[in-house]
Length: 232
Image 1 (cartoon, rainbow, N blue to C red):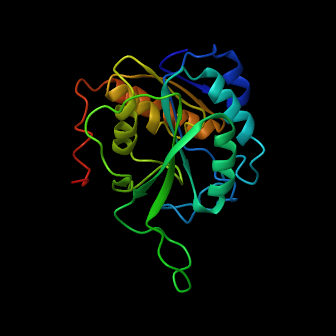
Image 2 (tube, rainbow, N blue to C red):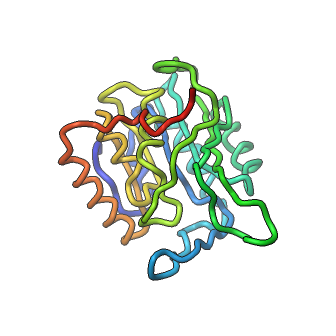
């Protein structure tokens, strides 16, 4: 199943993945907050599938534990709106080690006159057993630029995904993303020599992800995925 994205519901497709074969779960699931993005260049974003509930969360986490190898480390994005629910479910199966903060180097649009400007997202770092970190021990504040001209309302920057994947996997190991969106996790994995298995339920985003993965596969050199950091 390596280096392929599947169209469908990840809870169904994960059943075909053998137990203890995945080296990392790195995923950006729906946050359960009925997100409605602002306008893109020409049209409003469509609603995110399954973002009006968290019924999928525990089955997904349980299956993630089953397919993850022993002594592996994992990442899951979430929003402060439901951070308590995510933590409680993750702790039923994994050890939650930290809550990372992605500093977006810019603000997001919200209530322009009645609220502070959002500048961060949260990333759960959790483990099945214990795996040593590659490279230096960085802090849990991760400054990475937002994507301009993105093709998905919550698209994550490839350099951020490259950084996360690189800290706890080796070349040739396999990363799983059950909510692939437009392919950032797969692109990041390919460019730093990891394998990936991805799932996306939305046909339009699935198509975009395949295009991006094909384009990324043409690159002969991985980008310097530490270049965008300011962690000193």
